[in-house]
Image (cartoon, rainbow, N blue to C red):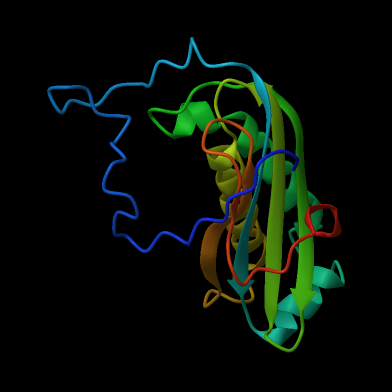
Length: 185
């Protein structure tokens, strides 16, 4: 993440800048797809995370590869990659963009009985990859749920969030309080 850095506070549901406008609305207030044709092609990257809370025995079964449905982490990784590639078909006003890379990683936290899921999406395009990164972790988490629901229907998918975004006119966003991957420190 090179170039000018600015750190923005996390969004809380309130407008953080009164001058910003909603880009998906036209002058009449109707929804529209944003025209990005005049924007330059730049390197863009986004990292998103979520957590799946579960019983400790469920986490052990997932990590140990002992689920009756099969290897949950492999299935969830493929689901996340496939979902990122289809984001434009799932989110109505997203552009179809060429992904250079999409990575899905899992970090078990035995103390909290949680599986943290992280995705990293990269492109060279006229618009960002935040939605692709967030769709990827969402699909990976839903796949974990599907693979392990036979032993733990009480699992909770939580805290889907954008952690880092770089590239484009708005520059860099880093969510305060997150532990950054080594490449982003």
